[in-house]
Picture 1 (tube, rainbow, N blue to C red):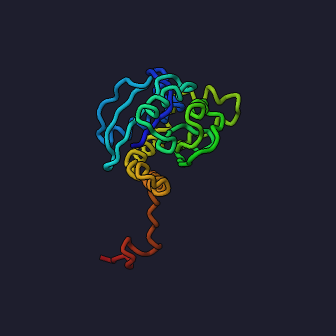
Picture 2 (picture 1 turned 135 degrees about the horizontal axis):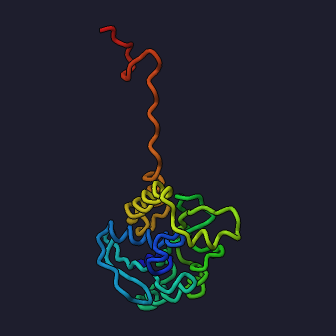
Picture 3 (picture 1 turned 90 degrees about the horizontal axis):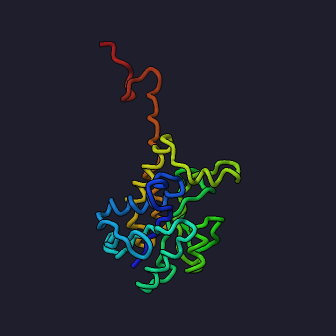
Length: 210
């Protein structure tokens, strides 16, 4: 059994914030794989089901970001999970918007949600880092992460969330490399068509005089 956790802040005020991209990813996975409605449990919103035959729990902590670990610790204890059975989706300022990385262990990088989870589980859980970019000034970070995504962000944000949901079976299977590759492939912009050489039609034949 795996516990997939999305980090964010609860309530409609924060729903579209950059800091809530972890919630958005969990919602996309739940929709794509037809999991039951979320219900209140463990100081969070939780649903259970299977993805590609693997039992999973999806959790959105409702404790606010800096106490995310209080919620995550509940199902870890109840289901007797180990840190390696936990996958956390979170926003990452150090990645360009739309980029994704998966790693196991490591530091929290100043992310309050990860810092809280570290205090309960240690560091040996898996993380899915979802790039939101950096405002360029550390003094602007707080307002930046707690600001809604712009309409101009949707062309990369929506395909990213869709790709994560489609590739989720690979993540659940523990194949982090193929998961990342599939997300990158699914979100890659289409290659522009090469123009036909001058003096030829689209089939590479000389132009017709008829």
